[in-house]
Image 1 (cartoon, helix red, strand yellow):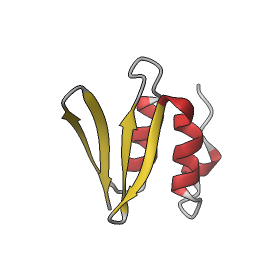
Image 2 (cartoon, rainbow, N blue to C red):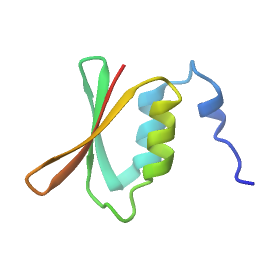
Image 3 (spheres, rainbow, N blue to C red):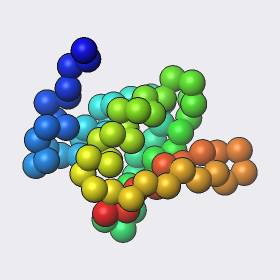
Image 4 (cartoon, helix red, strand yellow):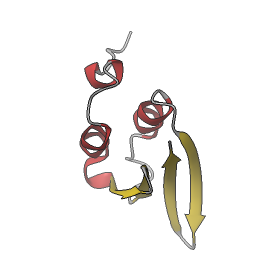
Length: 77
């Protein structure tokens, strides 16, 4: 059974910092009107499950969008 991330269990943890750590060089993170906009640079290496789990567990609405050839995750509180 995989270990849970301690930051996912702690709702007061800094989500932006946790997301940046998860994403690393596979994407870019920016704040957007109280939520987040994440650009996906490497779809194969991007930690989709971990990032989506971190957002959904904190009650964000999550949308996956495309602009031309670029893919984004947009999360709203």
